Amino acid sequence: MWKFLITAVLLAVVTAGAILAGQQMQAGPQATQMTEMSCSYRSGLAQVEACTTLIEGSADREDLDDETLATYYLNRANGHASIRDYDSALADYDEAIRYYPDEFLNYYNRARVFRLIGDYDAALEDHARAIAQDEEEPAAYTQRAQTLYLAKRYEESLPDIEKALEMEPDNAATLNSMAWTLVTLKRAEDALPYAERALENDNEEASGSLDTYAHILAELGRSDEAVDYFEKAARVGGNGYVRQIQNALIHHGLLDAIPTGVFDLATREAVRACAQSNCRLLIGIDVEMAEQ
Image (cartoon, rainbow, N blue to C red; front, side, top):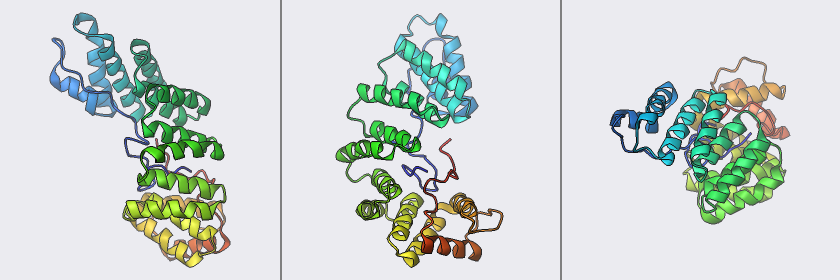
């Protein structure tokens, strides 16, 4: 699984995991300011409906340029993506690109949707287009690294993480991504300093960083410390994170129970057994709480 912006093992930070919104446009004669704001800043069906109103009214607006219309399609695509209507999202991203092909966000967001549906080749093509539009945006590189990781092209993802760290050397999420990728490659000694910096920079308040550090400690044979950090990650990540590790423990044959999301004694002992044997709890296991 990927650890870019995981707090409760959920990708939620705009600059490295989430769909990005197009800028708010000023209301025209046929659109209210509220509709404009809903199209720009809402999500789900409310955003889709607001953007649809603006798109359908665009034919009657002489003041509307292609860039503004493209923004409506971009934001409606984001609304579709937020409710997992990926076919509609992709169709609207295509329209946004048709009207305004020079917009970074069109490719950045479409790449994320391609990744969500498992079309990594298409996602990588859009990552390249996004980077061509803005070579100085760190998130463009971390997102491509994430796609490469999910495609199990771990070594190939490292240069993009390094590039992002050159631009933002103290970004805890990116430091954690480097640590997670290196431990996936069984390079725990190399991963350790990145994980320590990630923990320092996020004040040990991100379950993803805590979890990565626990995996590294287990890989280094420091099992007791690893258990402590898995438990810290459980406290920060809550029920969602605990269910995730419980599913992984079941996968490894170390837990015979229904996932409850509670870090109980049985879960702790199973985590201990995993750490002692270095079962690599979440590495390569498809039990993530999906970024979707």
